[in-house]
Image 1 (cartoon, rainbow, N blue to C red):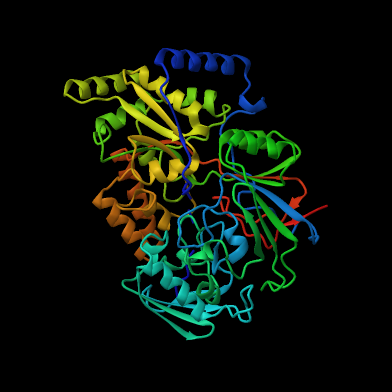
Image 2 (cartoon, helix red, strand yellow):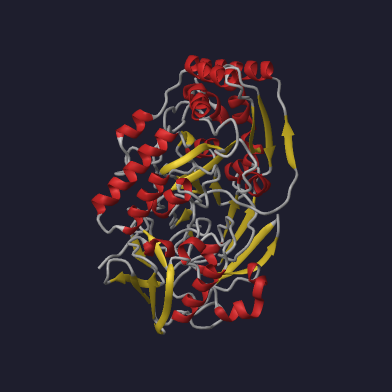
Length: 553
């Protein structure tokens, strides 16, 4: 028997104006230099954080200790601040919607160790090393419209991902050769080829693509495409109103399948895309819980004794995308020049409150898939060598100057990069965009030379394939290496833990040899709450399961 057992990024679809700016190099260099003098001279950091320095360690990364938080109280409405407006409640539509789990729950869950655990599905097993999988469901579960949550519902929803090529879970669903509702509580999946990691795709977050969020077939028939704003699931809450760019409210599902839950009466999600607004709303208590994105939010939360922080750096994290299909970064020497030109100590001081959690490879040092060899392959800071590479590229007829595109919230980071490139003779134009437009019009469309991203990697399958596999849904730089693809495929298929480890270690080494991206740091995706918010159950990507959450008021 094999049982198995996440991953994140940024996507939106709203068309909002882009802000563009070209800064003068001398001014930028002077500004960054002055900033460094102030930061290092006084020993403080941006956002009011003062004494503590150094990498940020994990703190309650998967939520609170539910057993030690006391007897849950019922009632109250939790107010949550999100980093963007949701696009849709349709799991076949690519977007980040933190309310999806509240409406749907998931067929399976992932443990902190990355193993698949039962949830609405009581289990998933194979008897032939990963070609045929049998899923069993919890009896007597109903959708919020009163219809049965059964095997037919799972088949109908999985077929939607098979039929829709743009679904974030299409690649996983397309692995299925056939499926059958054996009885009301049993589904059998037959795959086109063995896949030992198949159960994981029923446990992922919506952004990464999941087959685990199930919509009522009756609601699909009733609403059609309008299911995007009329979701009907079996989760702990139901959508009651949605005023875009203002608030989304959800009410307790009285027929929830986990008896006695949820504890809250409701949820209210407020889109707060501006980082400073979201941070101040957290600090002054306007919201109960914030889905934090960036280092400054996390540091301020850690330094505020009235707040509770849940955070784990995880694998992958913050990095820069090279566009492999466009000059100058189709040239390895230019990719190396960019990496060697970036002074990470200066970056930590000026942009990360002296608390940058460094990354030099796909997997964190604590991961069994990480190797010291991969870390040793990563180029070190060396401005002289970087300038040599730039000069050689220019002498061969290439133009090393480029445009750097990022979000409006990362303007200071972009200016830092701009100044560092000026020091090695590269002129950089900076263009900034609203997060939603940046995700759709820049990153997904491939309209960039160098750009930023945040991509936590909770589980190597299918996360690593998504980020560095050819055609991966998060591989926006179009990096491609056939050996990497072969190792990724083998890691997904094998049931041998030792072989899987070797495969991922080889992937990590090769990605660093190829300089596929610019590693900056681990992610800072945190959940920050008031002290009276209890029962937090989360993934490192910030996706939550809301049935256990309660307010100690």
